[in-house]
Length: 198
Image (cartoon, rainbow, N blue to C red):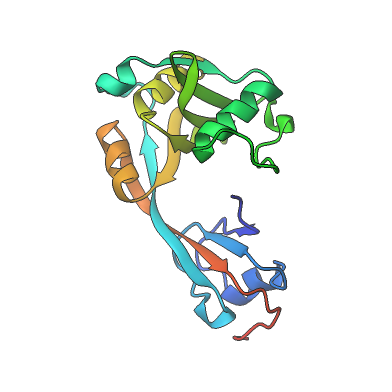
């Protein structure tokens, strides 16, 4: 779910990125925030490409479709609710063993939003603040209208950012976001520990 490294500026050398991560373990990943790295020679594959998105504070709220209009939105308050949120996020009943989203994440600056229909979580997102913006991630279900309403109510005056691709990008654009630049996520699936390109 989370990369081993994230580039914070463009034109970083592939060598410096690879030196800073554990390539011996399977699943090593890098978020290439500017889509300008070439890690193929180091055994990585492109997991996906996406676009950074931005929505200015005060932009008009999108009209929810019929499915989204009936949802009740609230913040996840405790570990039990977080487990239910994660089960809905994963599309299951929560009976899987390991948790990705630990209760320690329920702290200032990070908010799990849950959209409920008939008391059951059917949509959600994670919102976090930093750098004068609200970052939105991990959306699922018919989420954008409700998420934006909750985010704008909790943090009025802050721009909203994130990244999306495919149909999710189209949905975000319809919700008032603008695509502002590419990013790429790389995965090194084999974990051989051998760097192929120096």
